[in-house]
Structure formats: C-alpha cells, structure tokens
Image (cartoon, rainbow, N blue to C red; front, side, top):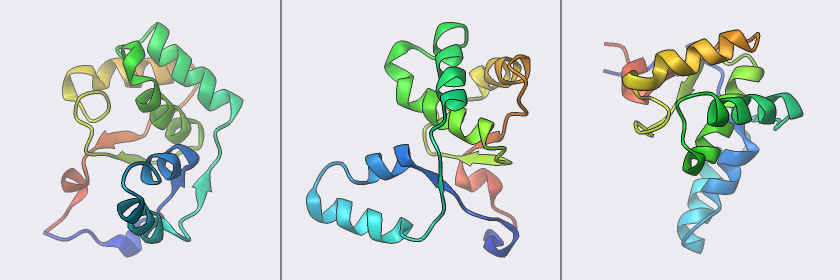
Length: 122
C-alpha cells in the first residue's frame, strides 16, 4: 500500500517543530531537515482555547496537554486529517467520538484523527 501524496497538502505546527527539535541533537537535526519547507500552522488563541476545552471537558487528561494542542491547531485551521502515531490520546477509537463532539460543540469541524497507515491506499 502506498499513499498518493500528490492528493494531500502537508502541514505541521510549531508544536511539531518543537517536538522534532527535542532529544539527541543529531537526531533532532535530521527530523527538522525532513520537515523543512512544510507550511507551519499557527498556534492561535482559538486553537489554545479548544485545547483547553478538550482537557477540561473532554476525554484528555492534563498530561495530554500537548496532544490537545495538536488537535486544537489542526481543527481550528480546518485540516481534513490529523495524522499521528499517538494512539493513546489522539488516534484512539475509544475517545475519538468525544473529541469530535466537543470540537463540533465549539463550532468546528474536526479532522479525521488517524494513523498514517489508516490513510494508505492500495
């Protein structure tokens, strides 16, 4: 299976850049090199407010504050998909409905929360 990347526009956030730059210096350099040139979504007050809603009234625990920011940024910026390998707090079928419901109640259309493999096609 391969993804038809020509069908998708890729975006990252400042939060992703921060995470990519953490850890071993050489590994961080390589990660940042891979994402260089990908447009960066802004961390707006609206995205932060939605993240807070996900933490206070949604299914995400306080320790998942960064995960809530990922969801908030993608949602507020109108992304169709949020790809992640984080199956604990983001691409988790057990809490996906609650996340989507809260996003909709806040006036947003949530992105599809999934792993890259789930977006792959034959």
